[in-house]
Image 1 (cartoon, rainbow, N blue to C red):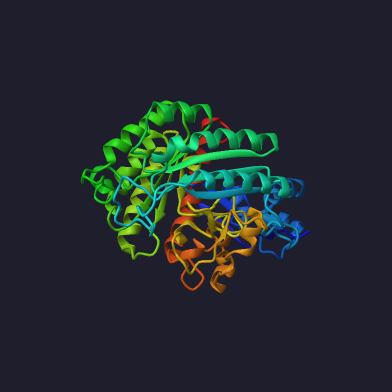
Image 2: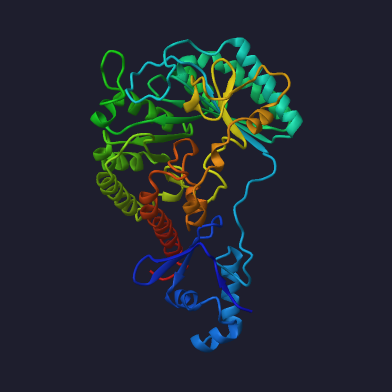
Length: 443
């Protein structure tokens, strides 16, 4: 038997005594190694047999074979070359839709990508009813077991009363069909009242909140129509959601206007203990040196927080990177998801709303269910470069957002290569601390 290292194996030190190993193409494969275990993994050259390694390392065969079998469980190594590759399933079992509830918004963010913003009002009742009909039809035909709806806009909470009845009815009908409905509002969180709070608690509604930073770093771009900044309102409402135990996460689009504020925002979000995601702005040039500088400072803050018990792995995401779940593509678009506009047209992505040259189906089409529409629509997700196909991190990065790739790859490829190992290191530090806290390994 000859142990073979995973072709996408990453092995790095955590400190002077411990190391981490992870197969970047296999889910949840991160392992903590002591020096002796690290030496074993280092000695594997894909040529030597277990017997040869035992002689070289002065280890009993049963001890070495036992350790190698543990590594093989998550494909750190195998005894042949049949390593698992993330692949696209034949059919989806769950669906994920971005729902454009309205073109109306109470903020005037200069970088908003919605070309039809404030041109019309919200979705008509007829369209909303047809959306539910189409969901039911698709669940029945495709045996779908879960659906996620992200109610967005514009500002969807301005349409909250219009969607209350739909949410309750849809959850009830789909549950009877064996399908779970998960609903979240993608919101600027400047609108929140007791009705929204009470309903959200009763119906397991989730919130994704856009926030550019603290005070001036948010308020530079995210202003009300009267010119006032929105941070104080968002901060107050964010704390209300947390106090009511309503699931909430924060998304920050990182650009030149708010780079400098990332470290202070990181302190703030860690203190709130909410999940947060830092996404690099799409379609705009970002100062690469400043991006690396302020991201590095932010991750240093996260590293310190890990030592006080902060749950890094469950609280932070960088762009579309998938270090643990390892997807076969970046998002659900083109396979099990898409974006539905106020008039009922279904696009590949919400950035395509209002673009006449983008092919779109309609939920009023009686000849196709939602999966048919996705299958027969655009397919940017497969347009990847040769470089990406050879990359160690291809299952983590999945070439980035399909719509904004340049020559088949994410424009931030270089920054990903720097920070993916750091993200794994922080996960390893978190794991190491837990093992030490529970006296499973020496401090």
